[in-house]
Length: 145
Image 1: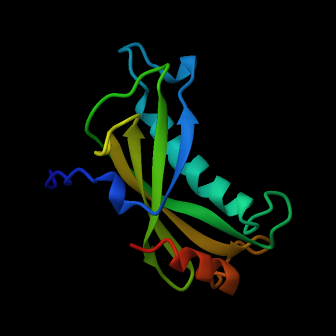
Image 2 (image 1 turned 90 degrees about the horizontal axis):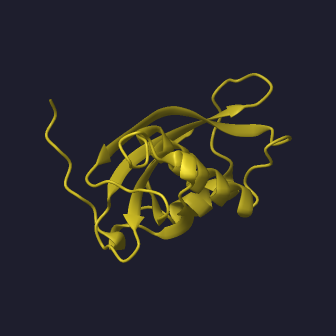
């Protein structure tokens, strides 16, 4: 087993998105199920892309496809809490970007969970990798660690 990651602090992230938990996010053990964390990662990244004009879900000719995700959990979160998802860019390549994300409980400076999320950019029509568009690349650079 790989060495456990060090828990990240709030200050390591460039921007945050608040997301409320929902009743059905809890599992039979009384905490948010692990798959929900991945949905939070996806929501934080894609919301930023849409809100900043870098992705039109229906028509963008270049789209990011998720090729890898991972998450490390440190403490439980449960409904009815809201969480803040911290976002930064960890690695920016020619056609791929890896985001680092942290899930923070209200008032906490340490991540309850943290992970990564990698997009490879492709031409929608061909599904073949392509360079990250220049305007998106410039915006991603502002989120680098």
